Amino acid sequence: MTTASKITLVRVLMIPVFMALLLLGYNIPALIVFIVASCTDFVDGYIARHYNQVSNFGKFLDPLADKLLVISCMLIFVQWGRMAAWAVMIVLAREFAVTGLRLVAVESGRVIAAAMSGKVKTFSTMVGLCVMIVLTQWAWLDWAITLVIVAVTLISGVEYFVKNRDVLDMKK
Image 1 (cartoon, helix red, strand yellow):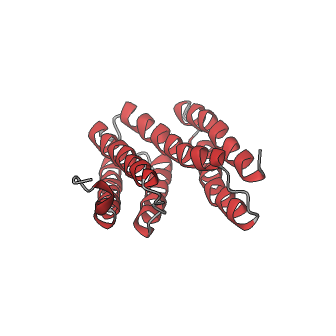
Image 2: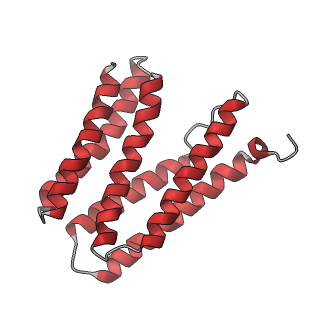
């Protein structure tokens, strides 16, 4: 197993720790774990590319780890009534749709790289969730962050499909 994959695996193992801390009301320690876990996404990617450690296992686990971390946080907020379930469903639908698009593209020998809008989506979602972890008293802020997350998620998803619409050519 490569160093990059080990770092990604650590991110996965941090998710239950993060969830337990947040559910028990230890918001600042939970925030620290969330931030560290989020930062490992950049570290493992850099190491994988810089040291030629890109692997199929890493390609599988890295995006899964990202989605599990974000969704675990969102689901806690849904449980607490701080985020709407429909918003999380939009995030999940976009992730499944883009993953499906990438799978279809691979079948035709094409790789769909992460778009800038996808990176903006990830960054704004992570920052928004961090704010929600720390600032718990303002319902209007939860609502505003949820709307931003949904907006950047939709924009990013639409961009992937518009730029790669030929992948889903119905005539083929």
